[in-house]
Image 1 (tube, rainbow, N blue to C red):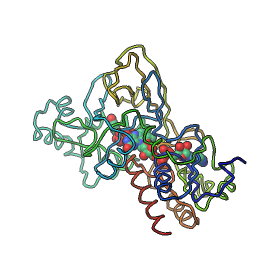
Image 2: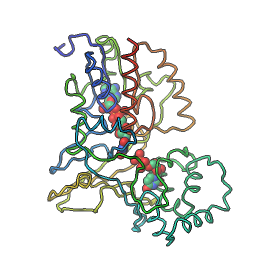
Image 3: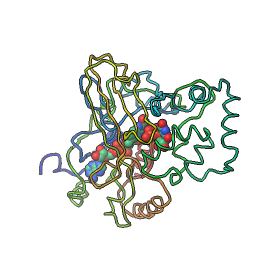
Image 4: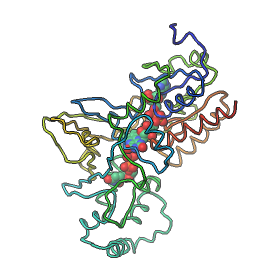
Length: 374
Ligand code: FAD
Ligand code: UDP
């Protein structure tokens, strides 16, 4: 036992990702003692960056901060200045390039339509025989939004690769994350505020955790009872099913595998994100990290993102919010409600497809509620 562990804390926080770090920051500010443990050898969870060739490499996939909420924007800007990066991925379908999200540039490239009226008419023509009123799944939702041939080229195969399921088996909400615009605007997000922290995301995490005690390479489950005994309250940001020892079965996640390459050239693909939307290319996206920060380094680092079926060793990235998993989640949530002194938060413990700003909002709300209930 060392000095860190030989002490009673107000909060033991399992996980130093954005949820754990934000919660710890707020509680520390309010005078509470917090110990944060993480099983990884670094803090920050999935927003962690590694410096390679003087470039901030988004180690667990590209992260672009975006929000409509001025309060949350100001909150993250306390810790780092943000640049003016606007996400505008390029879709590559068998060598044909299209602008994303779906907008007048995409429609023009595919159909030659030049006005919103022409583009809308083409979509209506394509779906007129389909008889969709309320879309029941991702396929129907996507066809309704952008027509059948854009669905085929830019959505169907990408989605089925990424999720390892047929588009008809996936919930419609997933595709509604993407804007469909009848303007010539390639901005992937509709939010008012968007950017990348200059110097990378570690600046945000280091700022949040500046006055907190963090113990890395420490898995809560290796000695759950001990970790529970050293704090009055637990904040758990790992997998909710794992916390309850998979009592009702395993919640399903989609995972990813990354292959990084360093290239001895200044500019590999001319854009930060390229999506490969055909069925045969085995990866879904290629990131060129320097473009997130307008880098001019002599070399470049790219990452190919491959979909991976969840398994015990794979990182659980995306909750699969279909009916079966949501029903199982409900049962776990009932157990969680009966677990005294434990707060469950973040993408894994809440089993929600949260973006960064939503995780911060959730951590702020839960820390506030906790302080109010004293
Ligand atoms: P995590 O970051 O997963 O942190 C959980 C932490 O808990 C991890 O560090 C883990 O090691 C630790 N942990 C788990 N179990 C244990 C245990 N038993 N013991 C100890 N430690 C444990 N959001 C955006 O806003 N914009 C984007 O562009 C964007 N892109 C994304 C791309 C990808 C590929 C993915 C997967 C996500 C993306 N997100 C994006 C979402 C964003 O990553 C999450 O919203 C956010 O990082 C979740 O934070 P968290 O703290 O809930 O979870
Ligand atoms: N999507 C697609 N084609 C693309 C990009 C996205 O079909 O070129 C679909 C896919 O189903 C994906 C969803 O839109 O899961 C949401 O995309 P987003 O980029 O928000 O996914 P994330 O960044 O969370 O992986």
